[in-house]
Image 1: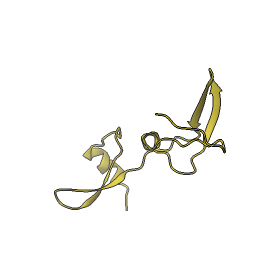
Image 2: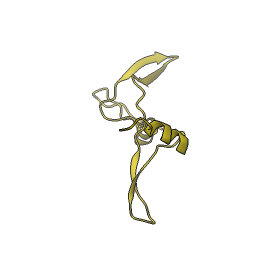
Image 3: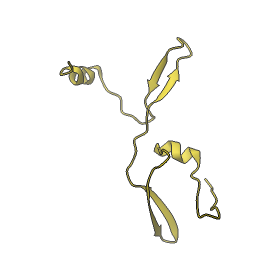
Length: 85
């Protein structure tokens, strides 16, 4: 991925990189120089949010977990809901 430096010293992070890290506007970064490279590290790793998807089969909208989200079992759901009022 390539980006350019503006006359104001600003750099636009490519959309693919922002999506991959779940970055939102206003995210803060630590900036460091390491071996002649500029390294930007998000101060707090923001977890990717689920996205709303419309089912092609039913037309219903549902929340789709981000890629890499571990699956949970029915037993885990029951345990979480056991104390729910």
